[in-house]
Every structure is written in structure tokens, then in C-alpha cells.
Length: 366
Image (cartoon, rainbow, N blue to C red; front, side, top):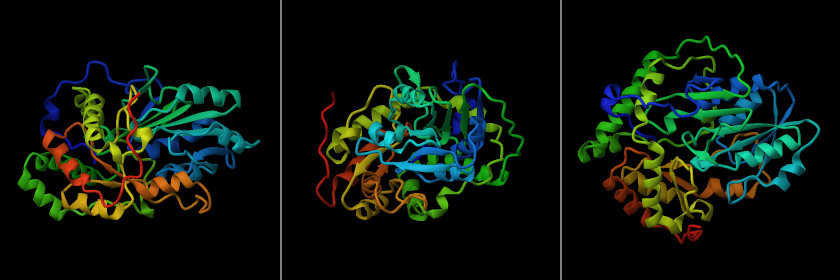
């Protein structure tokens, strides 16, 4: 699902101008986006029992980071468009509400400028979750550059094994004095990313790896914060700028369009055209038989993801129909920049054999 790491990355030239938020005032590198969120909340001046408007369609780790800081989540549904509804949010805003949590799902930019205005009119803070949307933009401005706090996840966009960022506005002094956690574990992750690149270049190695590897599936443990005080390994800022030429976002958009041309009738209408500035995280296939599709993709050696199938346990069981439907039906397949034409064709071949009728029809690009 995530891009592998080419062996020659260490000899590449760095990008002349690092993309936001690298090098920006108030940017702090961390191991994971959930760590960034946990550390960043206190810089906003939020206190225990303050309320934050949180999407019901979530990974779970972001909810955990918020609740570990003592905040109360007021959940909202996102609807089939994956966008918040202003009317629903207004009904949730109460005297204790302090912030809106806005997720840029799948690298598709939300209307961050519009939601920033909405927040300011109500005296709220804006938190941008750009963990799936690094390198995306909206109105020619980087995603994550609008909110009072933004979090990023680099390893979802390029081949580093871990790494993320916290951005606060105005810049706040944050001390991250921890030591890198589990040096041996990190070396294994780095080697695994290189191994994935090597095996992807050989049909035989790919076959052997797919037979021995167990596909990752979400579970209740996926939301754990881990060691929030651990510092990012020093090699990460060295590798990052060497993975940005050619532009990964443009390559991902191209791969998304290839899959969309072939599988467009299996995609939500709201995701069936690429908005300007998108940096797709993966290609979301909507299916009426998730288990069958995941099994079939596994058989073809395709690293598919059962997208956010397990919500945070604090999410009420009643309500939020759109979030429930998205959890039941979305399977993600890779679109990353290291895919070759034959890889895309293999994905198409496996995904075309639908187990049931498509839920939606492709929306014509506007």
C-alpha cells in the first residue's frame, strides 16, 4: 500500500525547495501523525473537558490522541461526499466546543479556507488532519497551511518507514527531547521498505514474498499512540528531500486516473474525478462483498487495505450511517509512485472480477 524505498535514494539529489511543511516555522518532525496530534493539542491552549467536533469516519488513533489529552469528542457524520455538513456541525456546537477536526481523506483536499472562516465566525480553532494528504493543495496553498494545528504523515506518501510533522500557527516552541525508540526496530522497518522495492522488481520475488507475508488488517490495537516522546530518527530528514523528484503527487494522480478509467464504476461519485491539487493516498474501491474482494486481491499479491473498518470504541453504536457504510464497503489499492504499468494492470485484472453489482456509477468529470 505504501511506496517502497529505492536502494539508490541515498545518492539522489535533494529537492531544491522542500515542500510544506518541511523547513517552515513552527514545524516539528515526529515519528507519527498521532504523536504530532497528541503533542500539539496542548499548544492550542485546550483544557480537559473542552469539546472538539470529530468525524465519525476516522482511523481511531486521532480520537485516542484527543481523548488522552482529556478532550471530549462530539462526533459528526461526513456523508457520502466525505465532507462535513455545516448544518449538522452547527447543531453540535455548544458552549464547551473549542475546535473543529477536519480530515483531508485519501489526499483529496477539503475546503480548508471555507472551514477556517466557519471556525472563526464561531470562535473555534481549526485542526487539519493531513496525514493522508501530504503534497496536496487547495486554492494553490498547501493542505495543512490553514489550520491552527496540522498533522502530516510522510510514510504514506514516500518510501520512508516512519516520519510525520506537527505544525502550529502561530509557531509555538515545543521541546521534543526524547530519543529514537527501538533503533533495531527502525532498521528493520528501513530494510523492509528496501526489500519491498527489490521484490516489486521481480515477479518471482513478488510471488515468494506474497506467499510468506501476512496481509495487514486493522484491529483494536491499531489506535495505540505508542511512545509519544520518541524523536524521529535522524536519517528521515536526510531521505525525505531525496524522494521528491519527480513529483510524487503528480505520479500518484496519473496512476489514479489509470485505475479510474478501468474501475470508475466501482468508486464513490465524490471520488470519481480528481480535483486540482489532490495527492491520492490510495484508490478506493467500493464493494458489496469486502471479504471476497480482499481475499482475491491477496491472491494476486496486491497489498490492499480494509479501510478504517474498526472505529474507535468511544464512537456510539447508534447513528452515523454514512460512516458505517464507508467502513463496510471501501477497500483501498495502491496508487503510489513506484508502481509500474504492469502493476496497475495486475490491480485492474484482480479488481474487475466483482463479487456483486457496483454500488455507484462513475461520475463524469466536471
